[in-house]
Length: 243
Image (cartoon, rainbow, N blue to C red):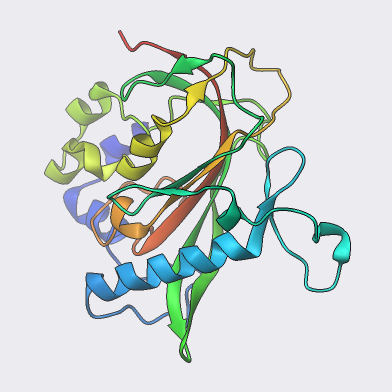
């Protein structure tokens, strides 16, 4: 986060508002002329994703195999009672993997999050609308193996906003994925130590309109999030009230 102090306004916009970056894999993607069309693509692609994936024994999202019958008895995400919020965000509460009673998650609580999150672009390829260009957004599971504490895409510290030199970087929307925080409040937090094994409790799918859409944004993952949806697979290890 300290890098933000080094950016000028021009650099910030260059980093985040361009359609493609060198390491952005959407080389063949053509951006729709309107956000409304992109929103429609997002919704169609999300529905296809829900029917093509399931949760394994640890709650991780897996794609159904077309050739291996071993996963035939798993339940599709689309059949796990997904809930759609007015923003277009979809969340799935994994049955049997919730804390009892657990702790309510407030909108500004400090969280300890074990997760794997990937981003995608919904595109129309020869009449077939689906997610393309999967790219890792964040993963504490595949990384250090310990929960991520209070990630800035969930809640950016006031000190970061105060230290920003560009007006756009003084706004919470530059950092935070509003749709993720909105959906997370429909879950409850565990009270686990950081070294506990994970058993993921659910899924949150944030369409691009509830993430960063086409707006300038902080480069959380090192590539442009323009038009990108994000799929979070997670467990909230613990929450504490923010001072």
